[in-house]
Image (cartoon, rainbow, N blue to C red; front, top):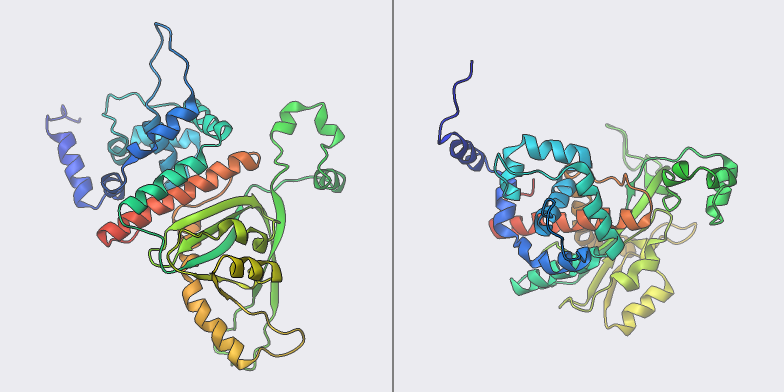
Length: 362
């Protein structure tokens, strides 16, 4: 039978967590979450509260809960449970064992208010300004890329697919509002092309490359990182079938002290090259392979040098997909955008912790 808890038991637990390298403690010590209070309060637009009733939760506390969701890929229900269950979460949020934990519905309502107020861009801009104030200027040029963020696949008939593609609501859904609310008409299918890997022990020169087409459903996360620090400086979200190259003018930032812009062949077009020239950028976009001809050796070497630099952006996507388990389980582009935006913010928090302390993001 367990004895009565001692006076120092909780502090001993916290000390043990700190000794084990609690990543959330490190994050809370590096990121000043108070810088987000202004945009959060403006988004909530609370009216004067009448007497009686429970006071509202602190907006910064609620925002930190959304950060936990982004870091650990938690649903609203799982978030409520994990906060009650984990001391590291409670310490990160500033809650004691007797503190009131927001329930799943409260978390959902808070996020919905941020969606309606389109606050995610203001939050991202506020943190980017905070990074600049701390000396982390966008430097060394910028690397631009995009990746598909998966969403639950829709099981629709060909007739319904055609209606959605034309921007119409299928007739059978109009009379069933509950079903319509559960159908994501903004997420789209896309195809990712890649090369088959050389079998182990096979001669790479004798292996004929095979193109693989992988169908993917969901949204896209378009980002631009600065080469010097690896922080996400610009971003956008779209359906998965959006063309990567069309986002380059939106992602290219003149705030970067370097002129270089690195990107893969999807971004090479006359329009984008003209945009870069007008903006005094230096294009380091990959050259395409000539049609029905071998890649010239000189071009291949130049592309290889660009790839060595451009590969840094893949670390961002790997961190979001594997460590953070990024997936969009919401309905509609507006909710998907805040989900992806929070993931980009959370990545920057982890990256800042690494830059400040030299410890790998967890």
